Length: 109
Image 1 (cartoon, helix red, strand yellow):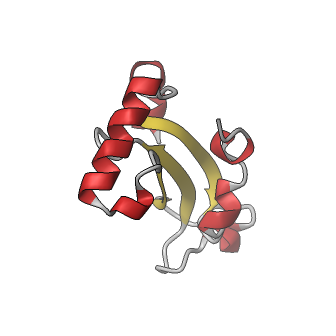
Image 2: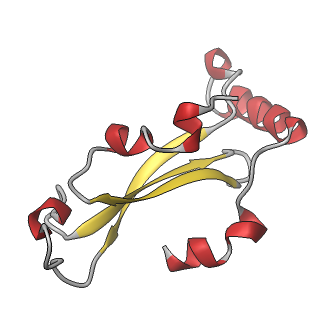
């Protein structure tokens, strides 16, 4: 998380129309023609914690038996540029719940 936040202004930002068009072409060619209008990919991952947090520690216990924080990353699939992210949910939080607090969830454009 520190790496993402320390580079925030240099590597994270909204996609311009040229990047969206390139991502759509990549998706159509690499994935399938039916998804040709898709230009973003979203995935969740957990960042492991060193130890169990002292407050509400059990909520950080994830499905892989680790204490962690959930994160959601939205990227352009053709160049892996990060366009949005959400950090801070406990490891036990499902990806769909964590996604609800990202900008992408609220502002689709």
